[in-house]
Length: 420
Image (cartoon, rainbow, N blue to C red; front, top):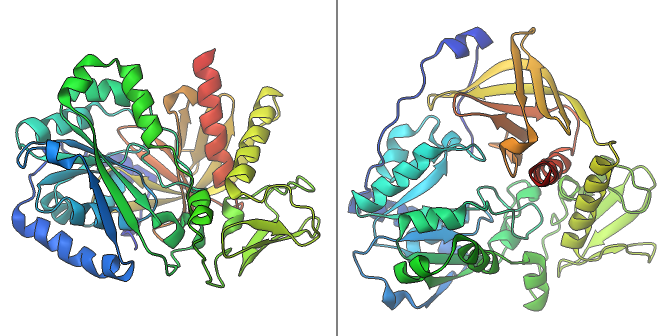
């Protein structure tokens, strides 16, 4: 999947008028059916099945908020199948509208900017539920999982549910990450995919519970480990490319502590600094060829990297400084490539400069609980995105394998800053 990109001058982008707001559109049965039809081939290929729990409690025409974990692109195809023919709007990142605004509107998509405070989104969700009598599908994690476990949920979700006061449905997928993990460069594995759709909160439940109690319920439903699930179900992934790009997730060698020297290819992950080699087996365990395996479970390795980042921050040693190519998003016509610059990240937050000194943007660590970051984003490259309601800056680092560490650092700096 690609995105429309145009090379322009920074001043030209800043002279463009802001994107006008438009209310969500209720998708008609034609487009709901079209979405279901185009989703069918992938669902057949994965022998998709769905278990429904308590769904008889939801009226046929009763709008609901539908929450779903986010593992890969097949998630939307799953939702379009299990919810059909119920009308539903989809909360979607604004870059998904680039070059296809009309189609996305017809499908009922509601644009928003990842990890940017957006009161307009709340109004749009309320409009869809109340005025359009349409359900709303939302991925509260906002970004794909890097290591197959749940990403951070915002603490404000409980308050949002209290404000909306509609039933809450949870769709949880199994096998979607194993089939298409983000790090693996869009290479699909032969994996069965399933889902569980469950009615988890009624309007009365939401009235009676506090926002914190609702958050606890949501966190329990958004706790998962795709690698552990693979091992418990004895799912064998035999493809010979299963470790391709794994260095994007596991960027730090636990043996020599070097960063950015890992290389995932085929079924092995190799540290080019110390030479240690790890093999990713068919069940998702990772073993060192020398017999000393620090972390056989990939999410444990990922958690250790988070701990290391936290220690760097607390010791005053954390800093990112890298040259980047810069693209800007100010409307849905295209993504504007404006040149290059320099991105730094410290305990004071992000600082982006570039375009011959014309661009100078700073973002404090308290601005967001997470970071919009991605691997091989729209086939352009690994990406870090910062910005605000006016403009988003998509930065493509010249250094390899720093996206994961930067996301971990942004999350830990937010926690520290909020605590202080």
